Amino acid sequence: MEFPVDLLTTLSHEDLEHSAEDYMSDLLYSDPNDPQYFTLPSRRKIPLSLSSVGYVPLYGADLKHKVLALFAPEDQFTAAALYLAEQWWAVEDILKTSVPSRKGLVKVRSLGERIVLYVLNRIVYRAREMTTSQVPFLCHSQTDFAKILWKDGEAVGFYSVKPEGNACDCRK
Image (cartoon, rainbow, N blue to C red; front, side, top):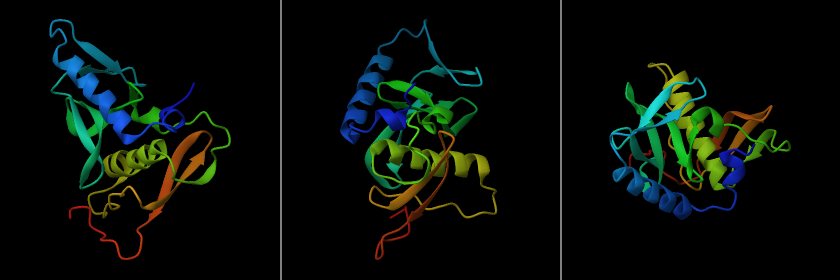
């Protein structure tokens, strides 16, 4: 089975956004009496509706590139899934790869790897691991140098470096 990082090697931001726009259009005209659900790996179902789906900026304050996210009703701030390659993917699956050579520290080059970096920073770390007393990692820009640590087919960590002379504030 291929995962988003494996599938998104040839797609562009625009491809993802057009696919998301088509999905949103279909959702807008879907039958409210026949709701659709996305099932998480935990078997929990989240309704697919206009109130649970929204765009999130992939690069912090840079609103040019966005991805479509699914939010659980009880947590409207943490995405449970992203719409990538014309389907919903749970956060847990976005962090996986089917490419055996992807192991150790790997430089972020593709859109799929940028999305994995986003998930590690904005969802896994900030929402699941960071305590209230910790300072969050800065938002990654599209050009930040970063590497992802892959272990046993899964992204388990990252590091990044802001280019010299760049602002270290994602709220600019």
